[in-house]
Length: 123
Image 1 (cartoon, rainbow, N blue to C red):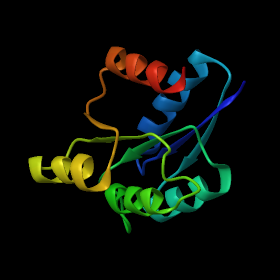
Image 2 (cartoon, rainbow, N blue to C red; image 1 turned 90 degrees about the vertical axis):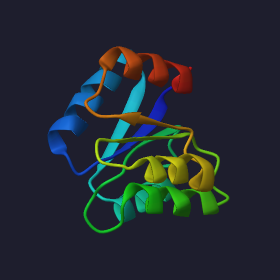
Image 3 (cartoon, rainbow, N blue to C red; image 1 turned 135 degrees about the horizontal axis):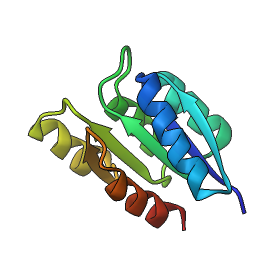
């Protein structure tokens, strides 16, 4: 069964790296958007099995987008893995405790950690 993954990140190079990582896992359809509002809209449209969400993006940030997703009953239970290089401890706490991100990983990306996390959420 093909799994759907949505990557929401304004960094095109990092998005491509993540997309290649998913391609190596096989049977995964990847969707990419570049800001929080488009992330929410695409999540509503494709109902992904997993969302990878950057924090800092122009316009709506990732945590705001994740809050909208969590408030939508059709997609609110979708696992969301946040990642960032710039969030403060308070931002990370807010993402986990108030918004309900499943977890938050930091940049630069440790591909071994990513592989383990992605396999867990997509198995």
